[in-house]
Length: 107
Image (cartoon, rainbow, N blue to C red):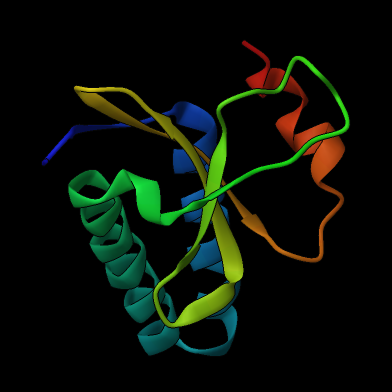
């Protein structure tokens, strides 16, 4: 299985924000993070079931999965998929309050 990848605007903004933050300390770290995120997207497109289902106390957030960016375990990718498409929804630092960030992911 190799799904088509769609990166939502919020995920693109998240990726840019994380890269900019990391670049303040090290340009190399920012580039490594960007490459790792893209590699992780590709791995999820090949095997989308490897992520864990995101369990929410809100009933209307369903079929969302999460998986850490390769080598950057504190950065979580939230995504959903079907037979043809992998949707990258958000990329979130793990210690953040997830509820407000994922509120718009309701189906």
